[in-house]
Length: 428
Ligand code: CMC
Image (cartoon, rainbow, N blue to C red; front, top):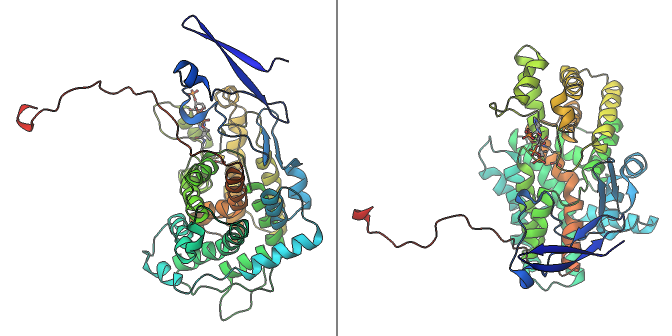
């Protein structure tokens, strides 16, 4: 196998190194191309551009494979826990018992957020979208921990920042919900494990005892695992890009949260339920909405369908669909949205438009139905995605820092006016 590629341009020939990954993925390394030829590469939306080498997550979109640090997502979803997966992503190996206990303990000890932060929540309008609240409060953590802003932080300081963020984020997220419904916030309970503690802060009340349903705890733990990392997607690339300027972790993650918010990315889980509700309220004619999605003059897209990388199936969606059925059965809940979702999936999978374009249900298609059954309101769905993705973002930020990656700064091909002279306002 050759390890160079040859580019011929303007009677010149350029030898470009080929980088091979551990799963035999190959990339032409064009880093020196510009210095030798003044050529750049152009790839809008980075559809075929590798921004980094990474040891964290392997994804094969053709075969529907997803592995964290080499471990198949199916095994992790079945056997692991979210906190163990967070450790795996951030530190590279599954923890030994003592390491996991210390990690859990460290996270538990840092879940409180500064009392002054309560005033931030109070200042938001009642209808504030929780993603906006969570993004800004996450960034605000940097103002309470100014030492996190130093570019030359010690390894210990970085570790402390990571643990603080992991711990406080579930409190920040749950308080955003409490604030949106005008209920008193619930303080974290150190006796509870991560997921139970989150559910306690979401649904507990100061006046009542709250015990999370184990069916919901298990389903949520699984959902968080499935969301925990997804290599160089829009929000993760944002975290790495912002972090590459040596912005602090809180600011970098806050930027990732904002990127996740969009309906083409994590915001799709909210958009899916809104779409299913729209179909139901419109009389339930699934084919009408399939036709709308196919119509190029109609901006409507089938939310929760299609993926930049998966072109066969999204392994997360398959696990979530089963988990959704199981959870609804165990809870004895029936949701008309699930029936509409299944009809929509069936119709799309048998329609040449979706088949030819390799459009399949993605992670967001069924997750919202599970969140609904848990009692989580629609506007909180993308916050739940962020809660799951947090360890992945942190692992990617840490890897970027450890690799001493240069500041991200893409180039462009300028297509505007060439030089022209300023005209006085009277002459325009
Ligand atoms: N409904 C209808 N048509 C679609 C859809 C859809 N959901 N997704 C893609 N297409 C069509 C698109 O119009 C295009 O058709 P044509 O070749 O005729 O122009 C073709 O399929 C390729 O689409 P694309 O927009 O060029 O693909 P992309 O890789 O740029 O976009 C995507 C990927 C996920 C943004 C897109 O599939 C989409 O908008 N899906 C709906 C939003 C969604 O579910 N997002 C969640 C993604 S998974 C969670 C996560 O972000 O990690």
